[in-house]
Length: 307
Image: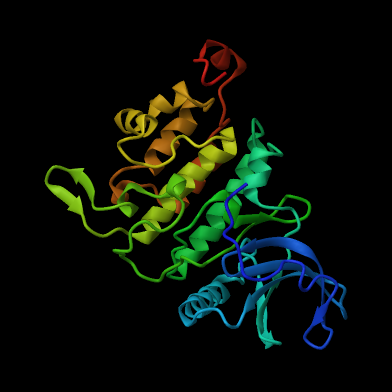
């Protein structure tokens, strides 16, 4: 399970209670984080299940500003079918309440690591990853980079067929950023850690958040197909990352990926961000790959890491 920082709200505080003059009844806890608790709530008039995030008003003004910016960004893109819908917010009894669509199929992380939904299932993986590409592509078309793309931030519908992007807390409208170290290290592009050396005479002192999103998409694709992360961080102390940088086919010594899939990932995870495939090109490639996985014969001949 991903680490969730503790909140100063008792998770059971609102269970069985109502808010907004009885309009929402809190049924159970969906999760918690540093800013509050997310409840599965039922609208008493429509009986619709919703997700309501509850945050104490006494949170520091800096945190409040971050939350409001997140909601502003989220509201600008939530009309897309693969982005969680944000409905409204209200204040009551010393708390803020933020109302979203409920995604009752859990998150993509659980679907990958516990349910193994995409392992050796080409069509399901193709369909889900295409939806992820659509969501991120739409954000980029609206001038927004997410900067925290990872399986934990994609939610599934109750039937598991629809994938929806959530959590815009690190999103930005900036085309270039000097804010290093944001996001989860597994999915961060090399330039997000510190100044990135492309070659001896080229050093990047800023990074493009949109191109960093594309890097994260490549890592997420590997997660979905294999249930594993190839490295803990894209840094030179990680042997697997160094091996991949020398030869993308190195991945096939660790993961049961077909050659076309490995070639595609190599085109996404380019050290030079300007050489990374566009989201449109990634989707075109995804649709044309016959299978993402090694055959049984290839697996039988592969290393023990693959088997």
